Image (cartoon, rainbow, N blue to C red):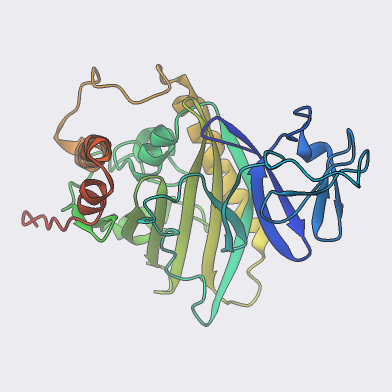
Length: 313
């Protein structure tokens, strides 16, 4: 895998999921081309074996010699949650958490982890696309939204414990012109900074919960790998494939538009208006986090956990 431009190998070593730099300390061959042997990862160039901490524990060519101190691959914090592998490249500040997911362990819910997909755009662009309230009528007419309702709501946007939170109430009348699988209802967004979104929908059709959870993994500045989990109330005759197919259709409508944006990164030269409130607040918070990071851990943690309640409701 590649995360923020860094090549990683992810492996299951004796039941423990680990992540480390994807190169052998010896001659820099890719460890991802290697073989798992018990609780070690063997480089398939010269057979060096690495343990779960990234340290070399065996050199077949000279087993009687002491192993050099530099014989290791940098390992990273790694945890499995929501059936996904989470890797943190820099744990020195230890002030970030795995993003919030409202329904993962909720009783009576069925979770579907959709196959990941890669887009040629920055992770920030993908986040903005998922939370953009103005594009529904034009990018998803008749699929996700009724184009007759092209004037978007302007929600109150709060910052709470590292999350951006807001809610909207699309007109229930739209249901008459939308497909059966369209998850239309009252939308409540809880977005863990910087790239994760928990969209909980109380469906108009039957008042049950339907959650779309997504996160964008920055491969580099202009590419992101995206993960989507659909969580919905257990029902009879409600196959997974129907929901996966609907979300795939929505993504196919979004992708060419988002990949057409250039530069792939968000730009200060773009013209923003009042209905861009969500993305404007998102960009403002990203700038504040970037500035605070230059000052150190305490400043960054303070900005990440700041409480800002929008009184304009």
